[in-house]
Amino acid sequence: QPPPPQIRLQIMNRFLLLPRHVRSITTSTSSRSVTRRTHAMFGGVATQRSSLLRQHQRSFADASPRESVTVAVPATSANMGPGFDTIGMALNVWNTMTVERSDKLEIHVKGEGQGKVPVDDSNLVVFGVKTAFKHAGEEMPPLRFKCHNRIPFARGLGSSSAGIVAGLLAGLVLSGKEVPVWGSETFLQMACEIEGHPDNVAPAIYGGIQLGMNNGERWISSRVQTPHGLQAIIFIPESIGETKAARAVLPETLTYKEAVYNISRISFLVNALNTNNLYDLQWATQDALHQPQRSAQFSHMRPVIEAAMEAGAHCAYLSGAGPSILALTSSAAGDVFTQRQEERNEQAVADAMAKAAEVNGTPGRIFITEPTQRGAHVLQASPSFSDKGRIHLFREAGEV
Image 1 (cartoon, rainbow, N blue to C red):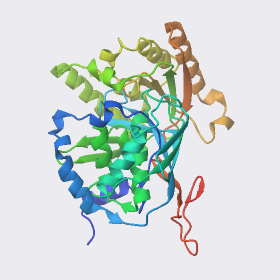
Image 2 (image 1 turned 90 degrees about the vertical axis):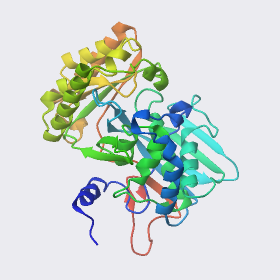
Image 3 (image 1 turned 135 degrees about the horizontal axis):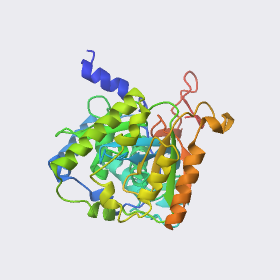
Image 4 (image 1 turned 135 degrees about the vertical axis):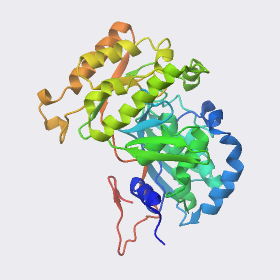
């Protein structure tokens, strides 16, 4: 029986998930209070966990357990100005993680966060794996984790969400379980149960620019068009940003004026992206709900945003809960290292942002990257997913 039209649309929007083994994500980050965050406005999502667990266990299908798996996950930039806890974009900066069966728990971390993230079972990648095994009705076995992190830790670029999704995917692959996507988005449900909101985990799972919300029964997501040729220039301060502290400054109530201000901006943002009307991004990324309140925490925010705009960026905003600032430019075509700089302006924007931060007394570094349509995925697994006699499955790292 073919699915109804609305499910067929979800099928088209969800094709980036692996067809049989759910993609995983990689990263190692601190668990902190993120594992307990929920939102009362969604009608007690956390209180439904026991019933969701039973539903998830019924929806799991058996596949073949694996001895080891290597996964990759992109960085993400949430909020994009006015879309607080609602919209996020995947970026072409990746963590990779290998998880293999062992005789004891081991966690090895190199790259971003090395020496800072926990190397015990409080690490979010471990929590994610445990959660996946729990939903599958099994106990997590002793495992060895090898994490290579390129996503800056605690800088507003989705390192926590990447850890959650990485662990969930690795756990599903190792336990040999498959979950449904169409009409249920079970993987997204599991990630949002931990994270509390979808703005980072949705693009981390699916790639691209994603909208997410809770419809009163479950979390749902929807893909937004990503204009071709976008470049992301990110100023990343040396200091970390604590999500808990960043949320603590937000007001409990809003005025109608503030609500209408953001509703109009997020509407223009989605329309500008879907229609490739990049000129409107300068207004579409304005915000009244969280950036003004967080400016006292991040003295570099306004000067760096203003510098990016003056240098020709389409827009600039506080990425996630900060402290990173992300600006968008365009006109990139093909490999930018072979394209004339006069046709692009990401370098000028990067220089302007770095100079403004220096004048402000905020040391940091600049990443230049682009959005990615690819979400979390498996790079390699043992035993292989390929049928060596007939079908060979390939990813960028080779055969899976």
